[in-house]
Length: 564
Image 1 (cartoon, rainbow, N blue to C red):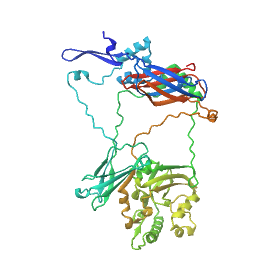
Image 2 (image 1 turned 135 degrees about the vertical axis):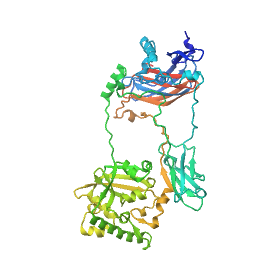
Image 3 (image 1 turned 45 degrees about the vertical axis):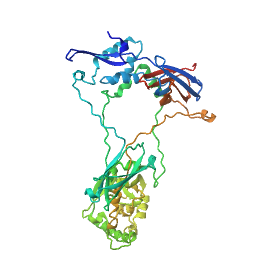
Image 4 (image 1 turned 180 degrees about the vertical axis):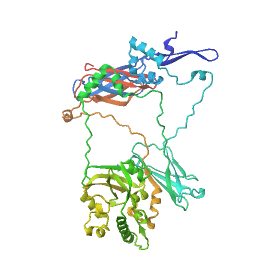
């Protein structure tokens, strides 16, 4: 016989060993020495009136009348439509299921006070669901392994700079690297130097979701910085904290009967409507998708980015006569645009298409239809986009799925200046003549890519020795949005401060009237919070859970009655 007061609440493992430390017998038992928390409430306000302000003063004490200081979660739910969860709570999680293996259905059942059935069932559970976290016989004999704990590190941005040409030379691979924040980190800036191998690290940076960084590298000595390589953070995947299997899809059918009745009533009261998204028209269409730089810079190259947005890239063979006509147009434009861009006729410019001897070309498709591709509102070929632009250069992308064909022709006419000579004078359709889109296709998908301000888009579509360094210059700076801390979201609770708000026509049928993860009690165990009643005032349930500073488990369920 063992006095219960010697054991804390939870699962207890008894071992019988001989003098050599060999286990002869063992038994799991559950100690129900948990003493309920004392909660004194003072209600200021009227629970019987709709949309009225109610203030709750709480005082938490342990079984010995000592104040419980700590931070707790608190919720107030309508007892008519949202009963307190009788299956899972902080006691069932910390004291029971975390110490057992397998899935425990409705663990809250075993904590029913004064129930002989629950007590007997709990003892049977100990005999069948026991789990040993450690090999105690070996530990008693001194045979154990010391866990290796990795050193805790703050959030950091790490990477490597590579000298121009990609050759690591110890004497010429030292760089100055600057980092500046975007979004919520706007104004943040640091500068560091790399080691002799080009490695750098910005450590102890705390950033929340939505924060971004712009990194730029400059060679200390005369040679140029070739590119910046950022190291991806490795996150642990699917590491269970304890061997507790996830809930089954039909686990809702295993809750208590009264809970099922309430859920049915909820279904009869509420209706889930589909989201309605209203967009302003772009190029005459409201059917479009827009991707910002925060979503774009996560991808390593433009091909991966396009495929991630549901687009496909295929190789299309062309008729020899059509290809020669297009090559002639490219060459004519190259000579003319050379003089416009830099004033040097001798600086030969040629397109990727004219340099290719194969009669094939990569095309991008949305579904089964070919896309017209524009960069900074100018027509561009796919090979130029994927070879000359990196995701870090892109500000945003817009995929318009049903542009009218006449508008598409107007867009092409505004960017393909040479087309006035080759096609407009003959009355040919630009979408069909240059992009081979069938004449019977009245709606055309258009993808428009907008580059950032620091990107020189004059090189797009045409290659020139004069702009040969643009791609390398873009690789020396990059913008990215790492995985960040999640910003806390406050639970929405309406306020009816004015007469107009109290008499509003929008019904208030909330089942959860208040929720907060931070109910902070002082040294006397006191805390206060407030909320507004709904359009169906009456009886409410108050639920407070958490762990006090002294380690005491707090689990309180109390009814808020109008008579209080």
